[in-house]
Amino acid sequence: MGQMITTDKINYHYNNNEKEVLALKEVSLDIKEGEFVVVIGHNGSGKSTFAKHLNALLLPSSGEVIVKGLNTKDEDKIWQIRQIAGMVFQNPDNQIVATIVEEDVAFGPENLGIAPEEIVKRVEEALRNVDMFEFRQKAPHMLSGGQKQRIAIAGVIAMRPDCIVLDEPTAMLDPSGRKEVINTIRKLNKEENITVVHITHFMEEAVDADRVIVMEEGNVILEGTPGEVFSQVEKLKALGLDVPQVTDLAHELIKEGINISKDILTVDEMVMKLCQLK
Image: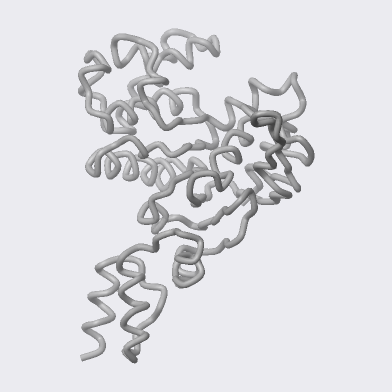
């Protein structure tokens, strides 16, 4: 596995009412090709600011961001970088530009100057990838939030990125819309081998990741597999973060003296472990 994105000691500050705010502090991370990384933290932790550095929407005040060998500070490489790392935002309404679904998905490739027959192929493929092909002739405003977000994701996939950065893509969706989007992201990662960096404040969305990164006040304070991170229940709660309910239950059972592993993440795992205790 090669490196997809490397951030080397990035700092980012901005001025807020004359006051300087340091939003990222010496953040150094490596994201590998094909990896599914989830970044969690509550509002103001720096996670969205971090996301916007990965495709040069923001440039670090100091330090370097390297995307597949390209430095985001190199102005000549910006478009190349944005093709490698596509971005999906929180509000699908802000990303949808056309009045027909398939035209919206074609918008990115058209801007890249891709040949029309190739665009048709890419649009179909992208819509099938997100299970929205039968909606291709529909008006986006007629769709549910989860469906709109899947169209926004299709628009990014049609540009054939190596990596997709999703900045809280489920924050404005209802539970079923969230599930649709998470399943789509997971499928793209596993079946298309697209590197995924998923920024969220919903802990359950991190359960399937290869790696979870926890941010607080612009710092990376925890990182590891979901099991390693979520088994640190006290530490996460002290930060005001939830842990998946099942992990919390395991934590309580251990406190009561029941011999069960502390890194249980799903209901199925819990059932298996409890049945083994009989």
